[in-house]
Length: 126
Image (tube, rainbow, N blue to C red; front, side, top):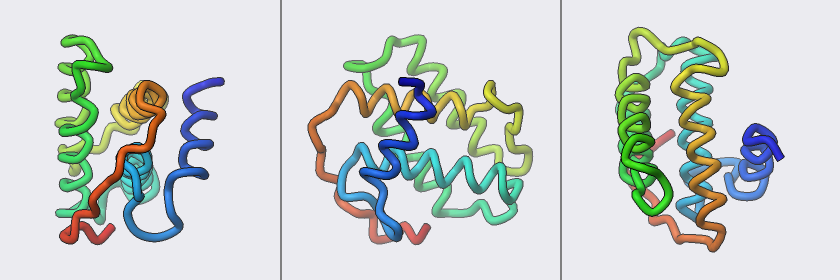
């Protein structure tokens, strides 16, 4: 199964219609999905504190040496920094930081299939 198809499956199974996901896996998928949507649909016009919180969540969870090599973690870090450059979103299609991070989020979820409880961040409103 392609990472795109797996992303859609994970979104359907793990991401609630509203609010944060109950699992870290679901929240990773929700985070990359929300960040990608804001960039592609709005050109990051509404990018704000909540989006920065999602980027930090990605950084904390995806930079996992049990799943990714040092080189991959360095790439993940650069891609998250690129996402945080909200005034100039990377809309380069399949090579964009959004696509690449989505693929890494899928890989992370596949490597950790047992649900990990996610404690909702009360400061996060998106």
